[in-house]
Image (cartoon, rainbow, N blue to C red; front, side, top):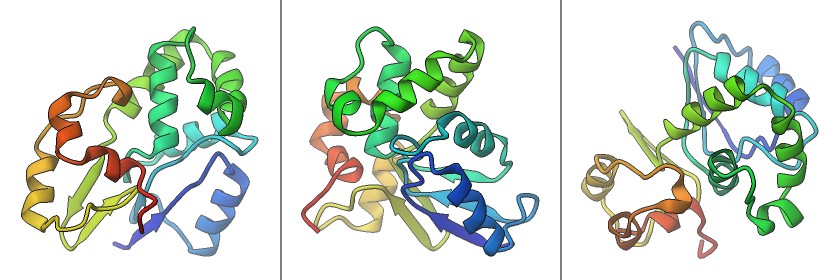
Length: 172
C-alpha cells in the first residue's frame, strides 16, 4: 500500500487523472490523501466530485474552497459573494445546481465527513497550516472535537482553538 498526497485539485479533473496515471495510482491498493480545495477554478467540478467520491481510499481534509462549497450546498440561495465572484464558485455552483437534488445531498453529506485535521500514523494533514506552538497532542485533541456543518456555522469552541488557521493561513 502506498500513500499519495495531492493538493488543490480545483476541479482540474483531466490533470488529476493524468497525475494519478503517471503515479500508477491503484485505487484498490493505494490511499489518496487530499489537502483540500478539490473544487473551483477548473472546468469539471462534477466529474471531479464523482471520481473522488468513487475512490474507496480517498482521505481528504477540508480546504477553504471546500468550506465555501459546503456552505453553498446548505444554503443554495445565499452563496458567499467572495466565493462566487473571485474564487471559482460561479463555475462550481452552476454545475452542481444542474444535478438532481439527491446527488447534491450525497455530495453535501460526503463533504460533511471531511475533517479539518487528519492525523494518521506518521502524517499530519491540514489545508492552511498548523498554528505556531501546536504539538501533536494538541492536534490529536482537536481531532476529537467534531466540527459544525457547514463550517461557516462553526462553534466558538473550535474558533478559539485555532481552527481557522488550519483552513486558511498565509503566515507561512
